[in-house]
Image 1 (cartoon, one colour):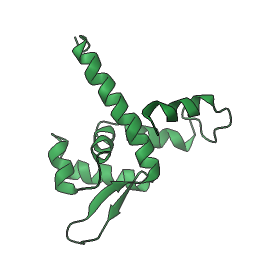
Image 2 (image 1 turned 120 degrees about the horizontal axis):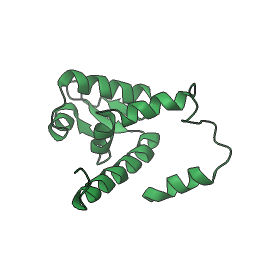
Image 3 (image 1 turned 90 degrees about the horizontal axis):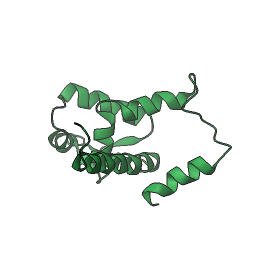
Image 4 (image 1 turned 180 degrees about the vertical axis):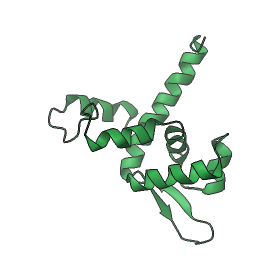
Length: 123
C-alpha cells in the first residue's frame, strides 16, 4: 500500500467504526500513544523491520531504557507491535499489520517535517 492510499481510503469512507475526534472514542487513546513524544519515533524505527531493544534505543537518541520499555509495552498493548521471542534472552520487536499501516503514515509525516525544515520551517 502506498503512503497516501490509506489516508485516501479513510477520508473517502463514511462508515468508520472509530472517530479520533470524539472525546470518548478508544481510537483517541491509541492516537495519543502514536503521536506522543516517543511513540512516533519508535514506530518509525520499527517501520524498517524487526529490531532488538538495543537497536531501537540506538536509533531513537535520547530515549531512556525505562521510557523505551514503556513505549514498546504500550504499542504492543495497542496491537501495533509484538514482542517476538525466538530467543528469550534477545527478543525482537516488530510491527503488526495494523502497526505497519500506522508506521507508513508516521514515516511519511517524518519525511514531510524534514522536507519542511529544508524549506525554512522551524524558524
